[in-house]
Image (cartoon, rainbow, N blue to C red):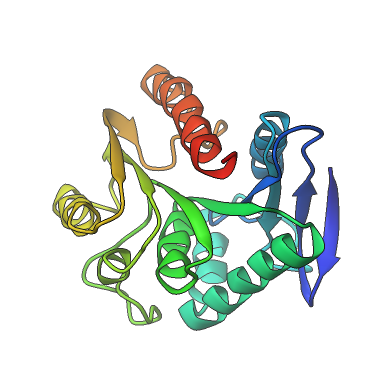
Length: 230
């Protein structure tokens, strides 16, 4: 488990000590490469899936100030992020020697992993956790995530928080319909009373969010293993 530099990018690599060679690209919350995503990567590695966390803000320390976070996130361009995530998959395939690769993303990262999976057809499984999809689309964004989702050829396991104040119910329904109208399998988990970002331990101590974490995470890991351990 170590911070790494690779192919001009930065990240965190948690290597599995057992398993069949499947690997996961973890696209983090807007907070970036913090201890929480390192812990999630370590948990995936313990399950047998080597996990690479992409660092969206190389050279900058993790922060918790929401105003600063919005500024950092708004500076990320969709086209550049898709290219970097594609390079991450190159690294997992060619340098780490992963046999099958999936992706999991949280909030901002959930949106990015939808965009990436629509373009990079090497992915075998996609898990967007409460992806942040705001309508109308803010001017700094380049790609409509719902339209992109319709082009994903891999199985998708979507997790939605019913009290999501960013991705509202109507947008979730559009996204779900776009995914379910594909030929690939789609599974959906909805936690009606959970909040956007409920996998963030510090920001969401409420019992309902803890219950959503406890229920959703084992199912997400099982979905990834089912498609990546083959």
